[in-house]
Amino acid sequence: MFCAWLLQQHESDQDFVSHILWTDEACFTRDAMMVYRAFRNNRKRRLKLVHMSINLLAFIIAVVALQAAFDSHNNKKIPNIYSLHSWLGLCAVIIFAAQWVFGFVAFLFPELNASIRSAMMPVHVFFGLLAFVLSVATALIGLTEKAIFVR
Image (cartoon, rainbow, N blue to C red; front, side):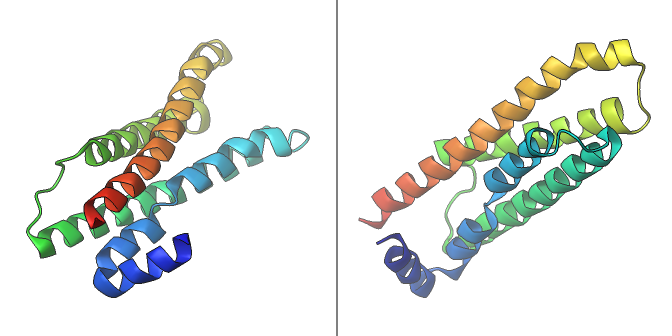
């Protein structure tokens, strides 16, 4: 049913489908979080690099999705950032970007001393989970909004 709906949307609005397909930030974020759980026996430095790389890929995908959404709205003369989905998505991407920079500076380059890193870890985990939950909520609200507006 979802695939039929997506194909129907593709025929009428290719920018929307691009937005849907590129909005897979939540999946990549989940994978990046699972790196530390699935590969506990690997070296910490390697895990940090994999975690950072997957999150960077997720951020790039989110930026491309935002561009597709803005293009779609501009082509249809729809205002940008007008709904809960838009605001939550923008907040998720901003938190995600700040989280990535914070994690890079605090945990990867240049590494801060161990006491500061251990104090920052709960904050990093909290905002990482917040960005993940926001991205999932944004995707669900976006699908709901689109289903309502199509009718």
